[in-house]
Image 1 (spheres, helix red, strand yellow):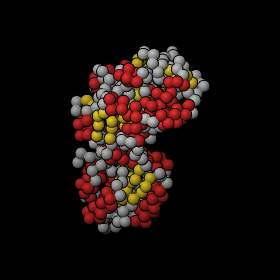
Image 2 (cartoon, helix red, strand yellow):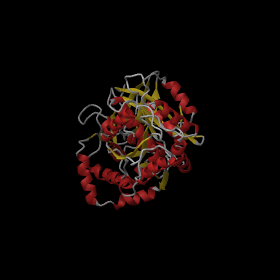
Image 3 (cartoon, helix red, strand yellow):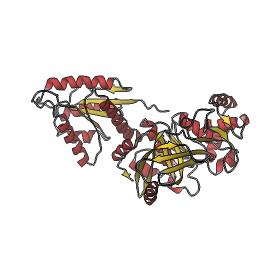
Image 4 (tube, one colour):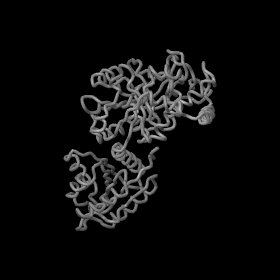
Length: 450
């Protein structure tokens, strides 16, 4: 599997004719190096300060050769704005522009960093390109957090161009809005989508060694999951399905997986794969049921952006302030109460077919959450996101059950809006409030926001 550890290029911009307070600028540059050095990144700093077209091309070539995920550019004193067009030629992905503050004392304009950065970002926008902007002192914690987000967002766009997704089977019957279009995905986002049949998947399931199954059953038992109406006899097949799905990550090197579980898999294998899907999600892998390609993509994006594990759910019902979220039993276990607590995950039989193995559970109450979705419509991608907090469900439901109270949003109005824009019936759920980050991502990827 590919690592999410980032490699960034750090480029300082200047000009041939010195200006402003060069000592102030040099001091800020050193503090920038210290701040970036604290991050869990591999840092590449070209051994040239950019002052003209040739030096910018040299610096970016060094970043290309090092295969960096994102480029961070600073002008601690105002640079030559004409070079923005050169950067747009030589770096195809969104850069991160970091503007640093003025010297707080004296009557001299010390850096003009924000003015220069403003110039570069607007040139990029007029060229139809996106960028991330950070403003603040490198010693300020809020600036550091903003920088971390900006680098992740810029790197996500670049990583998408090498991302590989697998769709096993197809979308579930009638769920055509969730079946990804490989051409739109590659044209709009850069990733590739590969198709595999359920027959191929069945061959992988059969080929798994019994010793590997026994070892994984032991690992599964360490999760301390209680049985509702199943037994340990159901665990070997659950492990077999889990390992078969994990094969696409470990052996085929895919970044995300969508699988058609309904309606064939319980008939083919006499079991549902939902325990395995929940385990994979808790391991930070991007997975989705029912052939939901864009759902698997959103899970990958959430993990890459540090939003945590993704639960893909149906929008079951709503009232004036709340949504009931439900699915057949595959939420990441980390989103539910601990084993032995009310609402903790239990291995169970499916609510409808009565076949194992799903997880009956409730999402932990009083968690801040973000509900969001990205999808294709009319030839491009759209995104919607709302924030809220989980409540104790009003009634028990088989499968995964959650009640969310939205903040500053009428659920009925939101529902009508997303239906008008063609949103599929699945939402992605992440712990924490991430809407602002997702909206920034949508700008970089030229998505419409609903």
